[in-house]
Length: 123
Image (cartoon, rainbow, N blue to C red; front, side):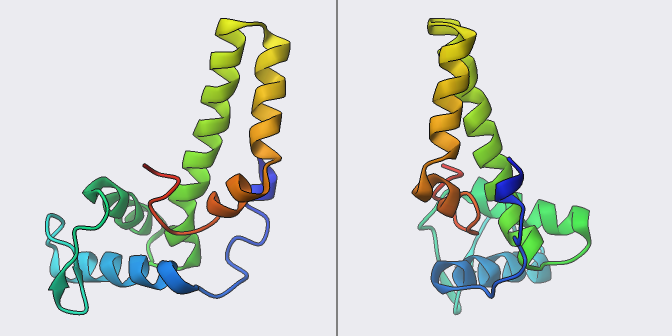
């Protein structure tokens, strides 16, 4: 689980992360949390709660930065691993749950998207 946090704020925003940062910044500045805008146009490409998680994290951390943008994805990844473990444990055994959780957290793309500020891992 710590591998999701290591160096989380060390690299610059890229591609879709800049879009999320702009939308979250617009929401925080305008106080309008129901209408996301990107470059002056309404942008309803992803579910509103994914934007709200970023703005809420920015509120808790006191700033919109790399950490507040990416932390909701990290938390969603942690919850996903935990849920996979619980499902494996419930359906099979604790060992099966642990193996399933470990397989998920050791998957490259899961770890990659679990550290990126987008809605992909949140939805």
